[in-house]
Length: 171
Image 1: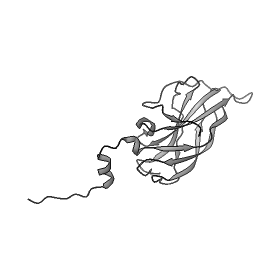
Image 2 (image 1 turned 180 degrees about the vertical axis):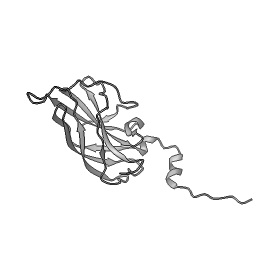
Image 3 (image 1 turned 135 degrees about the vertical axis):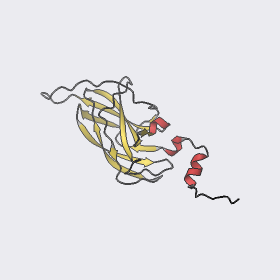
Image 4 (image 1 turned 45 degrees about the vertical axis):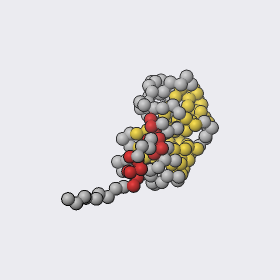
C-alpha cells in the first residue's frame, strides 16, 4: 500500500492551525479626520488604505476587495446602507502594501453630524469589521442643500448586519 502525497498550499496549513480571522482581514485607514459636505451629495475623498492582514487583496474577480463605509448619526444609530458606494482598488494589494484611492461616498440626505466608518469589504460580501477588524472613523458635518434645492427624504435607521463597533480615531 503506497501513500499518496497531495500538494499542500503552505498558506492553507498556516490558516488551519488556528489563526483568528481578524489576523487575515485587517486594514489601516488614513484620510481626512473631518469632512464638511452638503446633504444628498456624492463626494470623493482621498483615503490611504494599508493591508495589515495576511492575504493579498484582489482587485478583480469573485473575491475582489473594495473600500466601503458605514454611517452612524450623532446618537450612534446606524443609517440604512441602501446607498453606500464601494471603491475598487487600483490593483492587487499584498500584505504590508498600501494604496491611495479616491473613495466616492453618498452623503446622508438630512443635515447633521455623522460618523463615517471606513471598512474594507471582500465580495460575498464580507465586511472586515464583522471579523473584528478596526474601522477608520471620520467626523462628518452635513450642511443643508443650498436655498431652493429640493428637500431630501429622511434616512431610515438600521444597523448593518454583524458590524462590530471597534474603530480608530484621528485619521
